[in-house]
Image (tube, protein in one colour):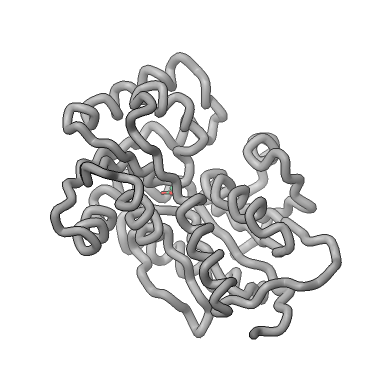
Length: 268
Ligand code: DGL
């Protein structure tokens, strides 16, 4: 049994997308402190090369390490597709690819799984490889959706333009009779209603937040990660690498019903 560990859990993404993961984790673990880093100065990651994505991700990890976090959740599929380490300097690192693949296989009866992601994530084939490693008979159909991140960052979750673009990207996957669709980018849950209008209720959607929360839960229960047992009110702090009033506004919307305690700009 581990003693109380009040250190925060570090969570990072290129921008607002990882807030969908933070919300899920912060609701699921109401006692835990969280420190979120959105690398908004260098967004998007999804159109960058593997070596640049890896370099940015390592810098984010080193920065969070210096803030004395107890674990890091890579709340970015693009970064997760390039950085597969389970730990960094002894610090546990949670990557969203394996939890998402596992969750999709649990939900899918036909084992025909669609994957939506950034160009970098789809090009890495990280989901395809992981799903086939876990279930070699599965069929995987992927689709890069480079226009989704700017729509989500803009907060256009229910705009007619978004509906059209979602239809354009998602409808070809339905021709393969998929029964499960991985939202393989943490920005995409922001567009979830538009996506499910196209897929219909017969296709199960899997998002990174739900999948990774399950893994953290398991590690807390099995004692691999220490729980915060303090009676003090927990804190949720948000950091970005660029200043933007728009980010703050969209962040409040995504995080509802949670209220972050602070927003600040940091230098990595
Ligand atoms: N939210 C990130 C992901 O899960 C990437 C967005 C981007 O910067 O392109 O892939």
